[in-house]
Length: 261
Length: 366
Image (tube, rainbow over all chains, first blue to last red; front, side, top):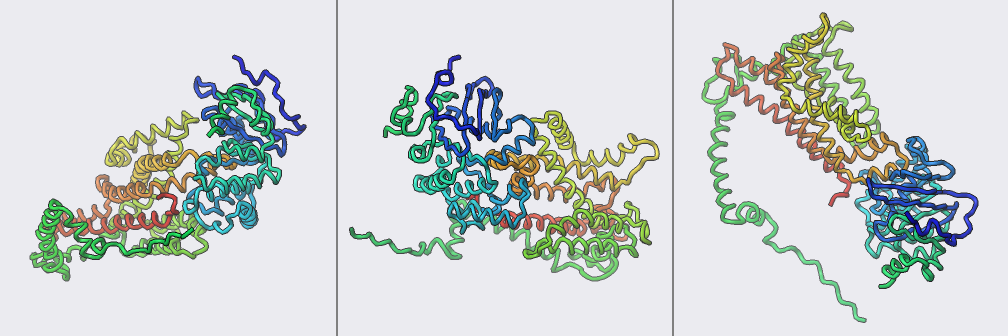
């Protein structure tokens, strides 16, 4: 099987010594369907990566493998020096260091915003309630909705819910943040408030992997843009070069489809 | 640019509101509905006045023997004379304070749980679940601390109904939850198969069979000399039987929880038990409150089946009273009384569940 990219040398920025997340020759199948093909990716500490590609290209699956929401069947995934194995304790440890923001927010509807934020710190990190609440309020202020702390998720708008979801993840003080199409389920007027929060987070030096089609966000924030198609990484480059001089035909086609209107 | 002025708020049309509007909308909104409304009123006219006449207007309320009954209407004297037996069964009169104490303790423990600002709810709940059963057991059975031993065969009446129903509910819910979780454990095929087998086996047989098995057949399988209490066997039978039903109700709730909830909990580093207890179950159980209460109500009424293994619960003690030669011919009063008591408890549960649903509503379902 030929993988055009994995073999060919692509001009990635010189990889810094310290890898936060590393995927080596990762493969995954759903039954017979080969969803991830020989994925190699190295994310340095503090690096911000945007992953894009057509639907069904495996981009969500790839980042969901990093915290084991999906299981990879071949290859290695190393997060902050710990290899992801099927050991449950190991998985839980990695998950507590890796924050994730979902397309559909997935806030816990039976808990208030504040309770959503303190749940994991209290039960996983064993943080005392008072301290966990202080941290939660700090992050809710950072995502600019401290006044909603006592409300239930069902009483908030989509944009507000997504910002709460980001705060909830941050309350675990993760070393990496994964974003799985965080603005795709939002009404247009709410996308900006979520992106603003993400830009702020990027500026604070968080290591981020974002699956998104927000190319403006990619241009302003990303260190690298990765283009995936049919389960493989087709092209990766700095955003400027990626958007102005795509090298692969598939990338050109994709960019013309999403930017051409 | 000239601003377009906002249109003012207008009141809704008058025909849509008010009592007359309600009557028109709900009772006479079409010729068919109008006819059905009149028919219903006529049927009520046929049934309600005679019943009220029998049950209240022409009924006898005071007296001590069957001779005090005029027989023109219901004779509630029968119920009044037997009330003690209907409530305590054959529990010795001198010891009935123990039953009362148990009930009073239960009320004393449960009522604060409903007070909003009561701070120690969790502790009280734990005491209720752990300490209270032990205390209640020793109080009712006796044999220690100078309390006379009262055999369970002497228990009866409403108090026995309550014992069976409460023990059944308290045991069936957690057991049902565990079975439901087990049945969903696709990564543990043996556990899953065991849970499926248990649920399908118990759901597939009538409760009467279970009770018969527990009281008549089980002793044959037990080793010589090993014999445990008939009531205890019935309790275990009822609890396991209802647990199988509860498991399917809870499983329905678990299936109603979106996958994203499991994923979000997992992504935060919460393990299986913590995500289940903190995130999934609170939502799943809330979703199936109607189903859980449905099962509880069915259980409450099913307790009357213990009659066939010789335990005299509320209905059993009423039937026993019906065959009293001094009081022949008053079975209607007995059954009406039984129906009223069962109805009060079941309706209470139903109202409680509706209140609970409203209380737990957090505005995420629109």
